Amino acid sequence: MEEIIKEFIEVAHEVFRKGLVTGSVGNISTRLNGERILISSSHSFLGHLTQNDLVIVNLDGEKIEGSKEPSLEKLIHLEIYKGREDVKAIIHTHSPYASVYGFLGKELMQVNPESEYLLGKVPLVPPFISGSRELAESVRAHLGNFRAVLLEKHGVIAVGGSLYEALNIAELVEEVAKINYLVDTLKKAN
Image 1 (cartoon, helix red, strand yellow):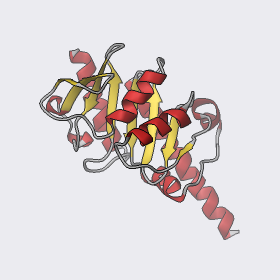
Image 2 (tube, helix red, strand yellow; image 1 turned 30 degrees about the vertical axis):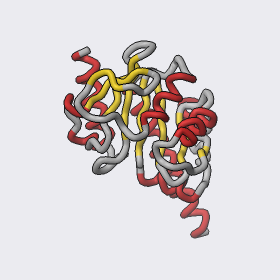
Image 3 (cartoon, helix red, strand yellow; image 1 turned 90 degrees about the vertical axis):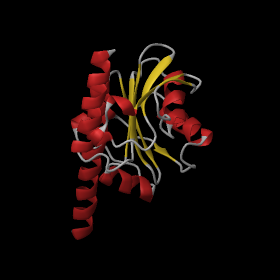
Image 4 (cartoon, one colour; image 1 turned 180 degrees about the vertical axis):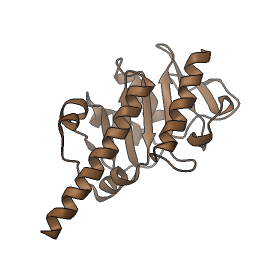
C-alpha cells in the first residue's frame, strides 16, 4: 500500500506541475482492488497532496478510511470503475486548452498519429451539475471504451490501466487541444 500511495502522490504533483490543474480543482483515483478505490479528498490541492488528503471508498461511495471527505466528483470515478474493469486509474483535470474546447462544446480533431492510436476519439459530455449522478452516468455512457472525455464547461476525464497511463492520456488530450487551437487559429488567419 505504501508504494501505491507514493505513486499516487507523485502523479498528483505531476498533474499540477504540468499545468493540468490549478489550486484545488481536479481529482485523481486508483483502484486498489475490485471493491476499494483510493481517491483524493474534496478540495485538496493536487500540487501539494499528502497522505492526509487521501480517502478510501468502496464502489458504493461509502468512506472506509481517511479523515477527510472524498472528492465531490467521486460518483464519476465510481461509475467508470463499475463499468470498466480495465480502468485502474482516473484523472480529472481542468487543463486550459482542453477546457476551452469543452466550454465551446467543440470536439477535438485527431491531429497526429499519437492522437489516433493512443487516444482515439474524445467524446464530448453535455453539462450537468458537478457531483451529480446525472453527470457521472453521462460520463460513463460517453466514455464507453474510449480513454478520455471532454466535459462541456468542466474539463477532462482521462482513464488508464495505471496512474501513469491515465496521466499520459490527460497530457495527450491537452497537447491535442493545443494543436487544435493552433490549427483553428492559423485557418482563420489564412
